Image (tube, rainbow, N blue to C red; front, side):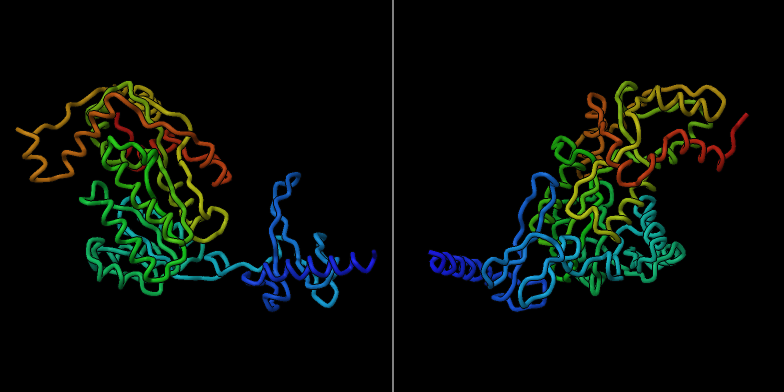
Length: 378
């Protein structure tokens, strides 16, 4: 009876080892000699890894238990990792490196001692990007495959953001992902948009095919879904100071979540230089959705004088066909304003707070910076 039990154990161990024959062992031994097998632990909610030995009675879950004739079993945290951006310094290509938004990612990366290659459209932009810390410059156009392929040569990771209302944005993005795959890029961080599933908004829906291409790519990916940017107010700030009115071409009552793109840039830098955000999708917002009356009140508090909230008209051409033929993106922008007149874009600040390990920057503080840079009129 005892002899039969030993034979059965040997047969079971042999079968286990044979089934693990196609698994590459991380322990440095041949695949038939050793392999790891994951098991979900309900109590700890972590995956435990067990050493499978060709010897009977040696499927041992305890760490540091010595298997006959082999090395120590390892804890999950001690298992060897594939090369990642966090454990080796690699060049990161930053798309839109000279832009007012993506340009914030370059200094965020250099603070982390990352080697950045800035993608720009001309040499003049390259000078400015170098001053922000980029080690290299690649000149090209996202619509030109040859220049994209050249920019991606030797790159380990990519930060990608498309220009606002780029014509054929989805196709341009998919082709860029294909180029990144050919170049052997390992990680791709995509600055997308909050709620990309909104098909009524062309600038949102255009992000979905790019995300799908990344899901199919086998690259490490991170999707950032930021809300409206604080920095958009910088453009209208001089007019607010001059007129005392905050006006936008949609309803005063529509509420929006917003975020400081410097926080987005910091999170992008984390995603590009650490492993903890891999394969995640992150909605990024500051605290509280606000309507225009709320925003005007914050401006009033910062400036020390009354700022009124108003609605401006949507710019109209003589006919929509003229808009579509002269500047196709104008049609999409007008559709967006009309959609905003009825609907808001709101999200939650929890994710940004968790990733940053602090409170996201506030809109009031951003207005304070604008006021300090421009002065408070009497």
